[in-house]
Length: 608
Image (cartoon, rainbow, N blue to C red; front, side):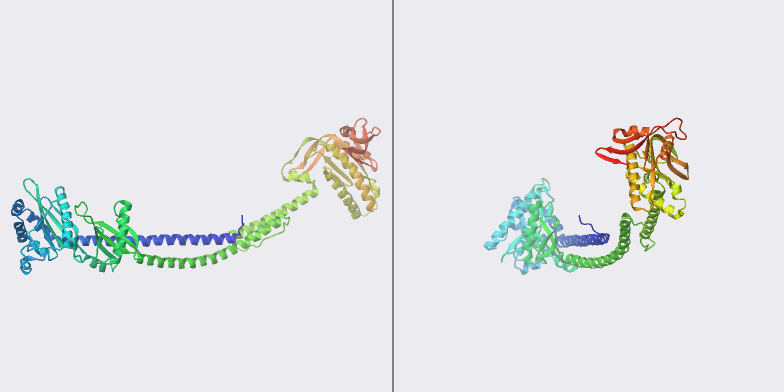
């Protein structure tokens, strides 16, 4: 895995943050703009529907009342019962001829040389017919019509018959739309009012009065102007869209999309989006005649989404522009912040590496007073504390054995003692006093330092603990504070090695010295002696005194050991018994041996 620097991580974090905010802003902005446009389109569509209802009521309102009144006419019912078609249309013409919505009037009838509204409707934009009880259109006119007109009339009769058959279960008056084919393959949209004629006593349907006018609705154009030409409207009826504002070349494509929506859900959605004429459009549909026997007619309104898309694009570029500026500012700010953070961090990392390598004198510059500056100050204080502790440890190792110093630092040793089974070694220079009698003090110190340095190294190599120096005497213990299974054997080997080391020094040093060594083994009291503010780790007991006395008895180059040491070393050494010794502080004679050599596991060490 690639390890990224702090600066790169900070830059990436800032870029991701700005990119995330930009993406969220773009998404929310586009959603808000789209929702605002759709809400606006929905509001305009509702306004258009209300306007259409008002316009339709204005067109047909003056016809509904007269038609209902005529349907209740006793003379009309009587003429229907007799099947007198001529009389029927005379009554209809007499009652409805002066209705302004039919645009005829009696003067108009005379001008057209016709006697009834039925005849006038053949030549004008009106339709007045009466249906019998079987839904058949009653005709009084004998005018001849063309073949296409006959086909159109037959289709119209079928539609009206279906409407009348449904009148028994519906209201007495129904309003709807029908399409009527004209010459020249033109299809007109008609608004129809069908009023049921029934017997008032038996409520039996006698027939129906049908009055229609050509649908000429200026509402489309007016709404288009009101909405600044964003609305294109029409009426969908029987697989054809009738409109003055939807271009002819777009109607077929719009109709296909509506039919597809109908196939998907069984009925068209009230709103959906399509591409029309290469432009995204929002289509709204609303059924104008629910629960009507007339063919379903839908108000269709199409709103172009080009404005919304343009607004979204403008906002998108604005957001991207602001985001680019913000990103550049964030990068500059990140570089400044990362520089202010990464440089001190790199310095502290380098300082940590220096401390790991043992350089406790390293310090890092404090560049500020903030948290990073406080961290740098803490680092310097830590380095200073570590350096001071290291100096203390070095001094402690100089005045005490390393094992004792480590145990003291770790808190394993406290004031007090414990019984330990150990071996004690004393090593003394033979004839030291007369040898140094006339020697300058500084030369004496130099000689002792050379001597003790070499012997101390030998003691440590054999797992011994240097207890103390007393003048020219060296005291070492084996088995405390850390014990080994071969402490006695280590002591013997150390004594022989000390003899050999001194002989090596005699070959190179200008001071020719001889040493004597005494060793005793047994139980002693080991621990920290002194006071709470000054301790000294040492051993006390009869075995310690014995080792000291044996050292005093040892001649130059001689190693004297006690009986216990001899027994523990067993057959792995060469030792010669000495004459019984009468030692100060010991009652009776003491058995001692002179150690000549150690030969264990195929290795052998001996004194010269």
